[in-house]
Image 1 (spheres, rainbow, N blue to C red):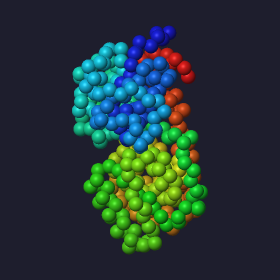
Image 2: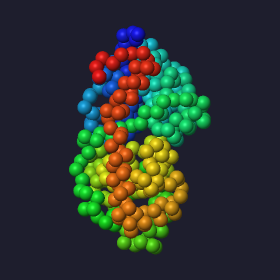
Image 3: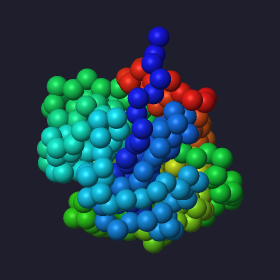
Length: 322
């Protein structure tokens, strides 16, 4: 029989930073507060705040500095941290139960191995942690807020030859891929046009989704992702996803079933797939429909239930409501 919750507070490192990884960490803290009654506190690392205009937060947590958190944290607290903060060595220095939600594999030179627990964002990241750090960890994928997707025209009603590129990751790798792809496409299918590249984290989430929902083809050239949430959001918005799988995208990407992707840096294959997709709309619309069906499986309820089960089992604590 589980004992009453012994944890008093949960601190979320960078909860209000405007990117997808810290947004998911925020939601882990939100679940601990709403479902377990543990008070959630956002920890600022770069003077960030909840009103940055990128993401919306329906639970406003009090916010303190990292310095204040390090002074206040006790054994009966929880710390939620992404692996990109491994250089802070929180596992070595701080008390409490320290959980790393590992949402990437290329955002840190060396993982903090003195944390108490690790959860991977994808099968690929779990395999990476097993191979490199001898860690056997559970997987909890991120979610899409399916109830808040903006309306979008049907696939057939979108521009026939317009492609939306997605810019993310190492700039040099992206630019070389982008230039090589445009050279190939211009030589063989000059009628294909490209919209202004979309940069995640630079515009409000609703605007980002609306831009994706206005095109048939979403081109992702991000070389390495722990999961790749934006391509999944593109599937949810009914676009045909083409490009690199980002490695972590293999968690949900099924080439020629719900998308057309290859590993980095096979850009010539990406160009061929893009040209073929535009020339074969009947096949592309089928991929888009299957992609939308795939995305429907990554809802908030699934994410929440997985974390409730994890904390109930890993910490032996009881949800206060469910």
